[in-house]
Image 1 (tube, rainbow, N blue to C red):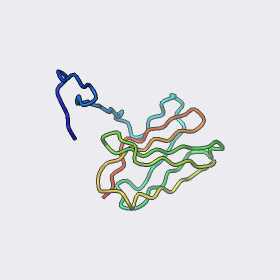
Image 2 (cartoon, rainbow, N blue to C red):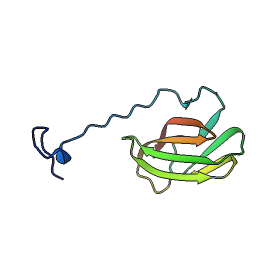
Image 3 (cartoon, rainbow, N blue to C red):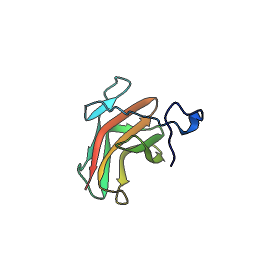
Image 4 (cartoon, rainbow, N blue to C red):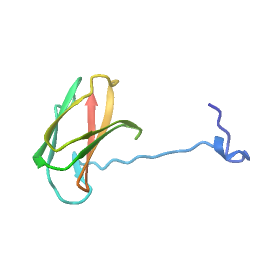
Length: 114
C-alpha cells in the first residue's frame, strides 16, 4: 500500500482514520425498547448461543464485526427464539455482534473468542 500526506494532489492515497465506538453496556437496544437478548458462553472457542426473551416472528439479520469495526460475517435467519452461531473459524480476539429485526437493532458489546 502506498499512502501520502494530505498535501499530495492525489487524494485517493491520503490516509484515513476511522474510529468505531461501542456503547459500554452488555446489550444495547438502539430503539430504547428493552426486549432482552442473551449471548453465551462468553468467552467461547467455537459456538455462541443467542437467545431472545420471546420468539421473533420477523426476519433476523446478524452481523459480526471485528474490534476495528470491519464486517466479518452477515447472516439472515427466519423467525427464531434461539440462534447458534459458529465462531470456530475465527482468530482469537474480540468481536461485536449486531442483531437487527423488525426495526430493532441490538448491539452486543464484545464476544471473546479464545
